Image (cartoon, one colour):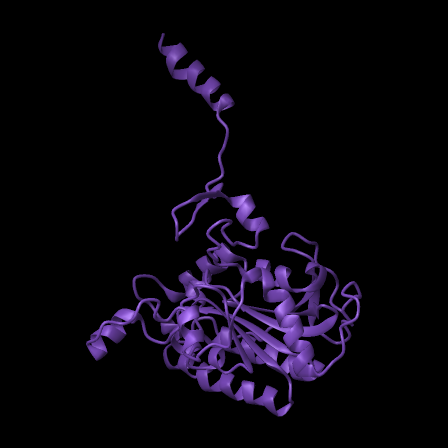
Length: 313
C-alpha cells in the first residue's frame, strides 16, 4: 500500500492539478470586490463598477496613450548606479537589481516619442513599481532628456507622475534633481512648448516639490493622493484634524491646486485636445500615419513582447 499511496497517487494528483496564476483575481482596494484580472487589464486597470483607478505600469501607460500603441523608446543617459555605495538592511545595488528584474525597466522613468491623435508628442511615465517611483539621478536624467527631445522636435511634453519622493539611497544627489528638472521645465517654457502633468496615485515628496507641480495644465486621476508630506505628519505638526479627502485629487481641484480631474478613459482625448489648443494647431491628421523617426535615438515599440526594430538612421 505504501507504493500506491506514496508514489501512484501523487503522480495522478500532479497530472490532474491545474496551475492557477497568482494574479488571476484582483481585490478592489475601495470596495473589496474580487474582479477578474483580464477584465481589469482590458479596462485600462480601472475596476469595473467601483471605477477605482489601479496603478498602471510604464509600458501599459504608453500603450494607452500613443496612436496604435506604437512609439519609440528614447535612449537615456547612463548614470552611476550606486554613487554613495549605500547600504541599509540590504545593498542599494541589490535593490536596484531586484527592481529591474521585477519591472523590466532600467529605472523608475520610461520616455517615449510617438503620435497622439496624429500629432508628435514626448511622454515620460513614472513607474511606482520601481522602488516607489523614487526620483534619483537616473530618473532626473530621463526627465531632462525627455524635455530636451521635446524642444528638439518642437513637440509637447507630457509626464505621468507617480512617486513616493526622492531616492534616499542617493542622498544629496537625488535632491539635486529637484532644481535640475525645474530648470528643464523653464527650458520648455522658453521654447513656448506645452508641458502637461498627469498626477496619478500617489504623487508625493520631492516630485511634487519640483516638476510635478509646474505644468501648464495640472491633471489628476480620480482618487489620486497628491501632496508633499503625509497626512499623519501634517496633523502632528499643526496639531489639527485634517478634513476628509485631504490630499485627494477632488479636494485639490476644489481648492485650486489641480486644474482637472479626468477619468482614465478620457485621458487620451483630453491630452490630445490640450496639445492642439496649446500648440495652436488645427485638427490632427489621421492617427494611422507612421511616426517620422529621423534622428531619434530609439527603437520602435509595439508592445512588451515585440521584436526590437533597428534604430532609425
